[in-house]
Amino acid sequence: MEAVSATAESDRPARTARPAVERPGTEAIEVKGWMRAHKWLLLRRISQFSILVLFLLGPWFGVWITKGNLSSSLTLDMLPLTDPYLLLQSIAAGQPPYAEALLGAGIVTAFYLLVGGRIFCSWVCPMNIVTDLAAWLRRRLGLKGGKVPSAYTRYWLLAFTLVAAAATGSLAWEWVNPVSMLHRGLIFGFGLSWGIVLGVFLYDLLIASRGWCGHICPMGAFYGLLGTRSLLRVSASRRRACNDCMDCFAVCPEPQVIRPALKGAGQAHPVILDRDCTNCGRCIDVCSKDVFRLTTRIDRSES
Image 1 (cartoon, rainbow, N blue to C red):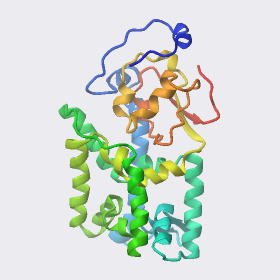
Image 2 (tube, helix red, strand yellow):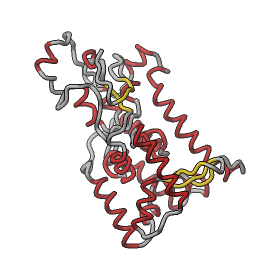
Image 3 (tube, one colour):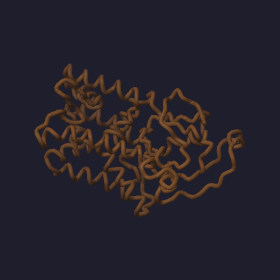
């Protein structure tokens, strides 16, 4: 990695860089213990599985706490939630939305404007479990290289899904959306949906590291744009303590967001402001020096 600016570097104690390890987080486990080195990962899994359970209790056991799916739902027969990306597709397709859909989309939009749009990707989306598994297995098998598409691909695909909706008069993307396919497969059994989910897993495992979430998924692109100015952020507030272990880069689903804050590349403050940061907290978990913490975009302090 490149050195930080001369001014920042002169203030730092001498340190010895070490190469990236095949199993990032090993040092953090030794220093902090297993639980602290996996705290944010465990909280995310609890969040993801709890949300899935709420949706599956009805179809599986007849307990209808939440009706619908991640695209459109009604909780306790009073709280409507609508995916604003789905609402945009519906409007593009010429389908006037119901008042409940507009209210539900407004609630969801307000939430992600505050906490960060791509929190959907790391804390809600069930496909994150699939792609995280592929990334973990890829590291364990030592798979390197692959052909990764441009990061702008997801934005082109986002635009294409809206154009396709307008051209067909239907929610065209929802027929192949892996998130919808996974949810549908859990309820009705895996058919074509199983093949789409497996395809994403194999793509991330064998072809492009973090290829789906980091370069292709239009939902990720949409929620990234939605949360561009969100309040909740990760900060490398103790970046002076960084020992260049590279573990944070190894586990981050969007590693390009780390360097500006950690190394002062293009910005003086330590807050990660990139819209593609998912606020997943894995950089916090695997850092043995406690360089990172969850804070707000207005907190520019260092310690």
